[in-house]
Image (cartoon, rainbow, N blue to C red; front, top):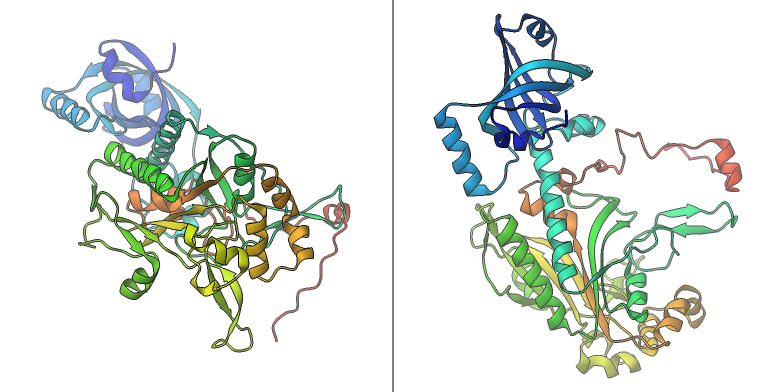
Length: 485
């Protein structure tokens, strides 16, 4: 007999069905036994009575055992059925306890037994030791809260995909093994067996590839891109994370910002109707004003910070293109020029001549924009430098020699010189957005298999050592680590 998902049981009242599920709760009451069963679609109550041979099996079942249950779908009392139908009508979802029916169990088949879990998976683990949760992440993900986080992540991603597809974007993948170039954070590097003493880098973002796609004439691209940065960690940062990466040709700052604003509003109104957006259109705050008024460039402009369902989006605009680095020997002194976002941006139109001529550098404004939400930067982007001479000028201001420019970015300069259209884009921190929408404290709560605060995976016990044979194949010899005195 074909399996029925729990969420669909109400459609088969009076019929004999089979469900495959976990035992959520087991209650032995002598001549009867009651169960709550769950699968990925919901929960339902089951009862055994009047069948001694089935009751005998039922009394052996324990929570988290995986079972195949055969039973007759019976309507529950009118009050529960009425409440269920009202709840379905209000929410349009069925990812919860199915209240209008129950299963009169006629047979069991145990598919797999389970050891007693190290924590209750029928309760929220929000206050459970995080290291224990990560060590047993497959159990943690069984909890209702974590199941809901993963389902909502999927629904938001699907809405984004559908919206972008309807607006003529192509979802294209870019390489994970790429070249190390000086763009910001430390790279994770991967040794090459076939090219001894050479290394790939894992992408900090698909920045160069998405611009090359614009050179290729794709015009509209997006991907949910995996990005890796070897940097210090915090609650809203992971060694690897997901960006919703978007790039468009023949567009202005205004075009990009408006399209993204429309998509964010659509996500909230369709998937989070209980939440309120504080202001539409989103306010636009110049960088200088944000720093002066809020002390940072990701302002929290909520009128009521106690309201967890209040979403205060805002754009931060008018960034300086360059800033001085602190001198390593004297923190008060200023060193070389560095970029505020990334070196592939373009300036505001009125500053392009200064950019080309490398004049009045401190006054050059970038065509950059960040989207912020409740005190977090959830996305950032810019109009790009599509003229190779302008990109060379930017890299020169940043202190790169002609030789280094060719070595690190020659492929980009060649591509841009082949006939690249004006273009720009944005990348969302998708994990951060989901953290805020789900009212969670860290992005680890909305990532299926995150690393802990030290960048380790306690479940897989990674990073880990590799064998001497593997090192030899890669022509790598490890240095002895000096122990602290």
